[in-house]
Image (cartoon, rainbow, N blue to C red):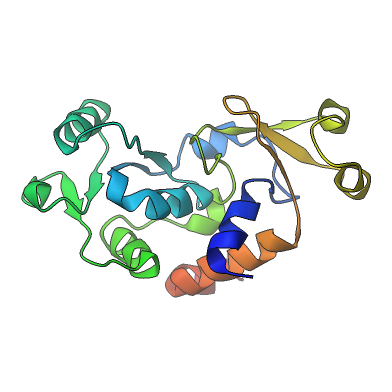
Length: 183
């Protein structure tokens, strides 16, 4: 399975150990990312970062929004590379892009992982199992006890094998943090 396919599947998963994500998500790092960094934004959200990323906004509009909300801007726009509150992302490869962000703005992605919707950035809410009976396939409902829902886009998340694969990818992207959190 390709990494992109695994990422898509993650929009329907969540760690089984997840409790109410609001307190944790409130402590997560906050960023704004331009439209050239959509994949990076999605992966940062999987790591729990609060990432505003609206492809309809121009670079100048996104920079203004980032400044209003006190967020560093992640950009590939060369015109914004000199802005003091922007991180110009050099690499075209998302794994290297994650490394650039974590080098400048270090945080523990394992602590915040899977607390936000990877599509719309909202905090996930754990819901009773019965609340999703009509929203998930019957075999998923039968096999899982814990579910979370995005209140904005109504995506349902649950624990599955691709969460494990995503955590391995996060560990590979952040080898320094995974050594410290594995103990």
